[in-house]
Image (cartoon, rainbow, N blue to C red; front, side, top):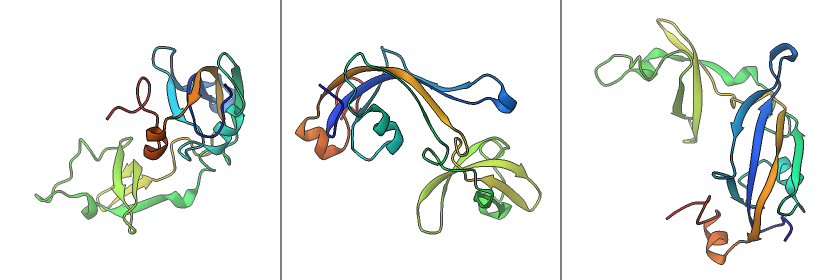
Length: 172
């Protein structure tokens, strides 16, 4: 069976991005045959270019493709770096939780429209906390290399729930 709309797919892959200044590629994520990435193809949950490159493949097919930054997580946006008042981060006791709010930490946030997002703390001063709301892979070309392990028709329940059930998938 070929990978197509509404199939449950399992792949083993290695995701890398280019190293700084032409250095060797850096591993971002690596699955295994014992713990593959399992997903509902065409469910709108994945990067469209990822699915486009897997479409039509079948069990045992190998893949090696790149997804540009623009087609992946977008270009790095300077306007996604913002300074927020320290007061926004103070607890009920008026102190800053230095375990949670520290340079390099990713902090769950909610924007003015109520959307959840993650921000990385990049600088702390007495008055402001500078946060980067770019996706960690923004501006990076993604390199996927792997193999298709399984392809089957998705069940009616999986289609209704929008995800794969069972081994490698979601458990209720």
